[in-house]
Amino acid sequence: MSRPPLATLDQIAAFTGLPKRTIYDQRHRGVGIGALAFKVGTQLRWDWADVEAWINRQKGQAAA
Image 1 (spheres, rainbow, N blue to C red):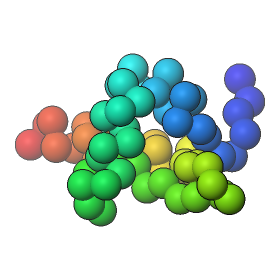
Image 2: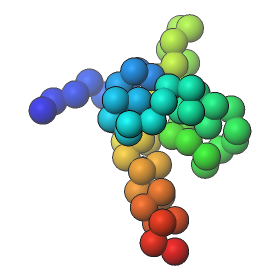
Image 3: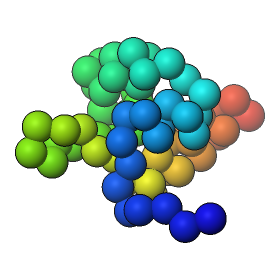
Image 4: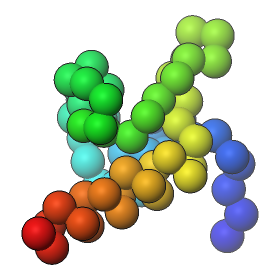
């Protein structure tokens, strides 16, 4: 399945199974806590590559 290069909060929540509030809160807790997000106009967006890198970091922490 093809996906656009930038993801919305709804897409990230659906992809990870996390509540939107959790994803949003992680963004404000500091670098490295959640996937890197940025604003396009007034809307938050995530680069799918950053989301996948964040998930891979989580996998590494679980294995440690």
